[in-house]
Length: 512
Ligand SMILES: Cc1cc2nc3c(=O)[nH]c(=O)nc-3n(C[C@H](O)[C@H](O)[C@H](O)COP(=O)(O)OP(=O)(O)OC[C@H]3O[C@@H](n4cnc5c(N)ncnc54)[C@H](O)[C@@H]3O)c2cc1C
Image (cartoon, rainbow, N blue to C red; front, side):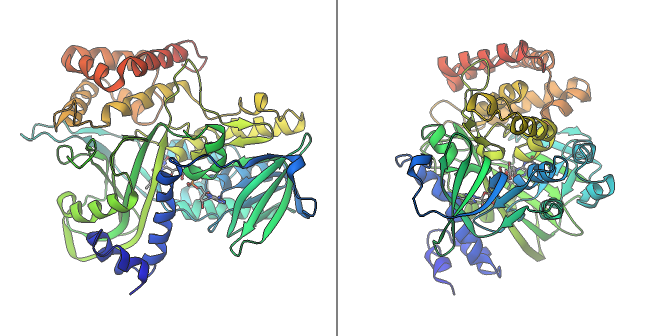
């Protein structure tokens, strides 16, 4: 038995048992611990990784020159493939693990995914080849002790299961077709040295050997652990988080392979030490007999709850039989996990730092997506056309200052406003009854059920219009006045004014 697994035998017995049965359980455990290092990073002084060109060691040898260097090899592949294929840019992508391999799979609707063919990255057939299953419908439901919960059905929302690795692999092939582009595995970002007319990135291999590469622009796509995002945002890269764990497994006895369970709460809040948490499940049929199930909760990044993926995974394996009936043939094919980031912009517009001179952040490193239903993948697909065209134009025009680069962002005022709603789903044992989140969300489901289907589709696809949100909010306040008190308790003066500022910014934005 491996020593790493042994270490968690007493502390996380359910996780220990499940991972011991996996061939690569030890490797996943190592990776989970690496992601969990995020919580420690938040407590430490911020590491300075953006350095002046004058600090570049005199003996540094440049190993390659590129238009764009991408640090991180997940969503970067989609952006880099467009930059290489459509705009002929020479790109380099490196990842400290294996590029184009994700620790999660994705759901999206086909209509949204087709943006990847509209932009010319893939053919429609190629896009269809990564969809491993389509569902007839999907639903959202929040627990009521008396069984009176409203199950809200919706079509064409997150109804396609995408094989993430296949999609990223196809993007990787497109990058490699463009001469001069490079993709490197097991290379870690160390720091970067900025000059007036270029940037040099220091990368280390698994043995600690340093390599230096030169580019016009460094694209930071290192996800939640990005040290660049940490430095630019002075140690507060996220305000809220959504720790998420799950499995791709087969052998459940009661799953419906035609239906996506978009959000499913099956009990009141978990009154664990700290503030407590409202656990929520998701269930998505995947390839053949496989089924993806996730467990997650929303929280403030600095709450006293245990937000470790290790702890949540132990809870997942303990509670999974309460969510789905596990048959004799049950087998876990792959664990999936990550910390989904969120940022509350206290202003009329984006307040998070997402660029610096010759540096731009995309994906979870930029943390501009809403964690409510869709997250970074959906946001990247939606915004890819302008994130690529505008960056290409900026390189051509040599407009690579912070002021110019920060305009190239996936910030969407509607998404920023909607992300505020996640605060209502952060349980707080000091102010909330155990079923508070469920009761509130159940009322939201009833309101949405009374409105035409386009309202719920827009809400769960991050496409809400301000007048539609106002309609939902007014109807909710009328039905359930308790939401007004909850707004004060959950958001406080600071958060309530911040929400109002977000809404005002949205109202005056061209994208309404
Ligand atoms: C379980 C789960 C399910 C999800 N499902 C959906 C969904 O259905 N739809 C949706 O829209 N979104 C979904 N998301 C969110 C989505 O997966 C993320 O938004 C997306 O993966 C972000 O991609 P990224 O490339 O920005 O970051 P990441 O996926 O975190 O990738 C960052 C990469 O950077 C590398 N890296 C980190 N540090 C360094 C370093 N120092 N040097 C070199 N490389 C480094 C990492 O190894 C990693 O490969 C889900 C998330 C989770 C956790």
